[in-house]
Image 1 (cartoon, helix red, strand yellow):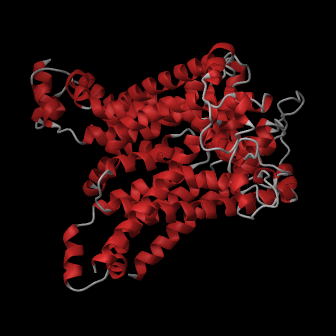
Image 2 (cartoon, rainbow over the protein chains, first blue to last red):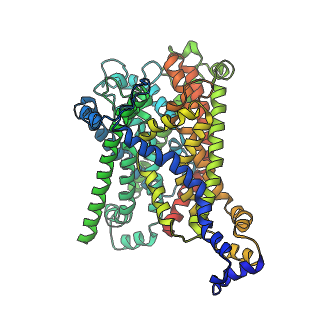
Image 3 (tube, rainbow over the protein chains, first blue to last red):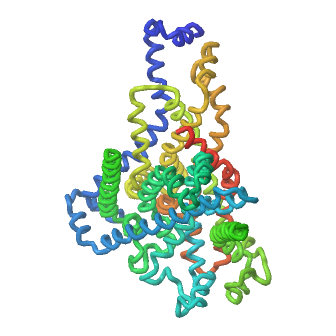
Length: 313
Length: 277
């Protein structure tokens, strides 16, 4: 045993190892990663391929005669589904506002926390706490705050004169989307603040000192030092977060269930509703395939944009 | 000049205070309603603190509801998922960190891909696959699904921890006659204990929070996890706000414990990663 190990580490006599030993060495990395790989392939890749095939089949859980191939029928239905178009529009609205508010408020928080002050460690722990709250609980918690029976928010809005009487904005077709958006902002600010704070702390301090000796004011320092240093982190986190939030249906399912009358449905929650409530797996998979195509297009656009920006420099 | 300085410090502290209030208020309200006795719930609905507090809701939830079962189920599912994922991810992460081999590029690509596509796509096919195996409505089924979902990220995490440990350590052990696997188990793994703890914590929290697949796969009360139990409770007895919020406070406990444990390392760890990368 000892001589084999020594031979392998010797390197020069590599090919004199017996065949069995060489095979064992070559297969070692595959053996280490095999359990993880087998699981990923069977529980993620196989269902993904199955799901794509469902999009072209009539699959309803409660109908034993379903299962046949129906070609593009689901997509024809989908192209005339007004609820789907509304969900598509809502997805843009939901993602845009959530990412914008999370990013702006997260950046301000990171800048505030970057200054040293007494009790900073405790404050940091407290403001990052929402990040640890399970998403279903964050959704329920905000749904209760918006509920005029136990929550204070409708009463505050009423006293401010913004509401004619305390009512639940989650059941208002015009406003229901804002409930999950506010909950999402509350829940997601820490993510941006943590990432941006880490990037802020990596900026060399002497740059700021040099700039203030040269007479640069705080705004000028922010624009010419902080922003350029943060730019790569901002770009990556905003792009990744956009994809993630556009697929994030938990808060909507918990708070409004897409209602009232599908007014707060996004594409991801619409897929879940089709599969979970109507048990129409074929149609759900067809919508999912369209969503996947849209996300791939978005990612391609980003890659092309990046290439274009790089070639311009 | 000094007046301006004081004003700027004051504005800074006020802004910080506003963030703390915004972050904590919903959780504070959850706690407040959970300790408000039923008879005061509607008359003192929007007071900041009830004139009387009681633990009657917690008492009811613990003794007369099925929430202890849900809590236990969630603990079993999240705990098993965390342990299995960490074992699989240590093995795979070690392979990624220590070997150069032909399939590596493809394995990394596959794992990155699984992080990109919307998991909600898999709700229907996974239900169809697990149903004939008798794995719907079972905790085992949930553990299998959660394990697969969490392995890719955990593998990258473990790989980064292994990358931080010098290669000479196991090379020295192998010169002394140990096989690579023995060196891995007896020398490298003990050195990555902090990394293993972080991975366990992340996966546990992720499994504890998962909603869509547990809603889809679990229907009975016996194997319901906390999110499923809480949501079905909300849709059935939507008037018992005190009890619902008491249950909500219970669901918060494990997540907050984990968070308090790791929050100190959160920004530090990311800074170190940024400097290295």
